[in-house]
Length: 213
Image (cartoon, rainbow, N blue to C red; front, side):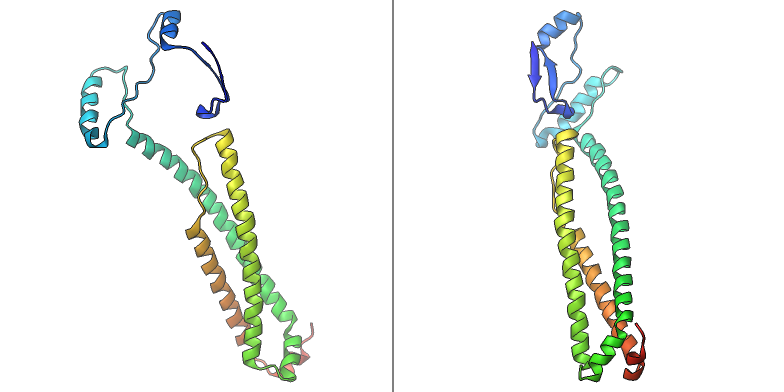
């Protein structure tokens, strides 16, 4: 018998272990708590049916299949993932609202500047191109911050869970969620560009230049 260090099962770092025979002799009873049966997947249904017949009528025995375990633990993980996803969606919504508010406020404060540029020869095509470049810069910066900080924090969070709670967790980059986020970000930017250019078309150059910041 002895103490085992660096014991990763269930998150415990140490465990007192001894042979099954010694344990049964010391306690005077059969201490077997779990019996694992490993079989070929082709024989899975046959073995399961046979084991069910063995435990029928014995209330002290309970059988749990790997399929049931996978379903149970997958449900727990999906619940946690769903909660975190809702939090992430709320954060994204607030960030998009902040982006819209900042862009519109910036545009309203620059109408006089834009009017002056148009008065000295800035064409509508050049104006739209300028606004597109500005929106692209905002999108690229937001994307870089999201990928660097989001990926880094996600990876570190998984490592903390692996070391403290579950050694079987692994990090997987959320390609689908990131692509959806980028698509929404681009849609918002193009909508803002359409709004700003449409707003400028409704005002004459004189009205834009007279606009006080």
